[in-house]
Every structure is written in structure tokens, then in C-alpha cells.
Length: 265
Image (cartoon, rainbow, N blue to C red; front, side, top):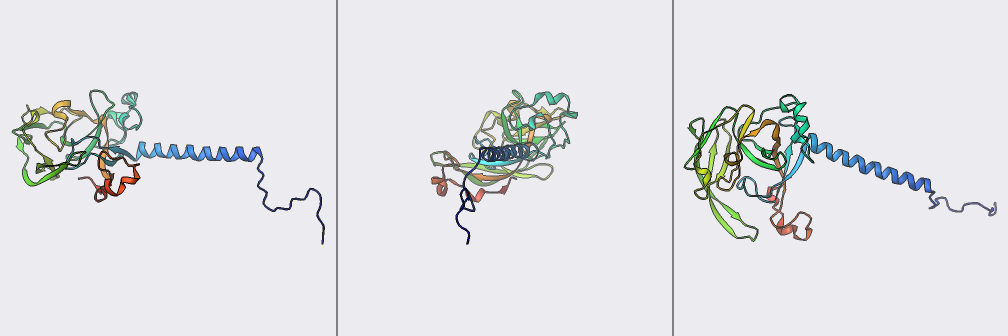
């Protein structure tokens, strides 16, 4: 049996770390963080971008407090596809303003940049295609001089941030391509009667489903093709205002779980 020798380490797993090993661990952690950030930006840039609903302009279809997944590849890519800030210079180098551009379908729910500033995100439904003629007459939508069927359905029960309920008249519209969706029509408003809007080539006419409470193409004008950010495909989660997603102690009351991961029509 050998005895103890001077300088021999009696532990098989020493906890001592050199400055070099600490530095290597820091570098490895930093690389992982950078990779995660790059991956997140890449996903938002080319695949899906999260979008939060802050208003009631699409009420009926979308609720205040909904978190959406917006498909970036549905219509191709433009300067508006960048998730952080508009890349306006790309307008001069991309063919027709978009790369791999595909036209939206009438009835799609779309996120786009506000034409007047090129920065603010709006979400509305595509109603008018290029060269269409759009008009509202006494609250009835006309597309190319044809009235869109407006069928009454059960009232929509709206709740404000305080939880107070209100009933709003709800109707079902069916566009010429067969897309059916619901709209709210609460009262007479400035947008119920409009002139005829002739949609220019390369532009679209957008409208909110909450017809009396929507700043849409009746007021903000036509939306250029290169201003489209993407198509709103699905609801990820939904939180009852004024609660926030990080307030985990309110989840049992605030989370609208019946809306989780549902397709947007």
C-alpha cells in the first residue's frame, strides 16, 4: 500500500477552475445568446412575426389583447418585412417592391404599414383588389356595383376593460370569392356612406370588421403592395385587458384559453 505523497491531489474531481476555463465558459454562453438572438430575428424576418392587438377595429374577429402569428412569407418580402424598423431603401432594389411577391386574397386579414408614415402597423381585412370599385351605401358594402350580402346573426357581446358587457349588432358578409366573415354595425357613422373608391393598380382597399370604429381605407387611403407586412394566420394566446401576459397570478381569470392557437378567418 502506497502512502500519501506530497503534492498528490486526493480528490478525483477538483473544483478549481483556471481564468482560461472561466473565459471559455463566458465565450460559449455569449455565443449561445447571440445565436438565439439571430435565430429569433431570422424567424421574425422570414417566417412569423408576433403581433399584438391594441384596439377594437377588428372586433368580432379579433379582440383587444389577442397575440397573433403573422406569416411573413405569404406575400413575399419587402422593406416592410423588417421587424424592427422600415427599410425604405429596399423599395428601389426589389422588383415590384417585393421579393417572391404573391398577391393577397380578397378577405385575407393583413398587417401593413400605414401609408402616411410607413411605420405604424395596422391590421385590417382586404376588401378591394387592384382596379376594383368600392363603395359603402347606408352601411352596405358594394364591390364593383354589386351589394355584398349582409346577413344578420346573433349579437356580439363586447366587454370593455372594466368587464361591462354591451350587445352590438352583428352581420355575416360573403365576398365575391366566397370568403365569409362577420362584421359589427352598431350605429350610423361617417363611413356608412362614401364615394366610389377606384383602387389603383398595385394597391388594396382595407376595411376593419368593426365598421363603425375603424380607421381604414375609407379614411387612410389605399395600401400599396410593398406596405404589406404579412397575413394574420393564427391566434397564439389571448389575454383579457387590462391584464398583461407576465401577470401569472391573474392567468386563471385573464387567459382566454378558448382562443389559443385558433385559425383566423
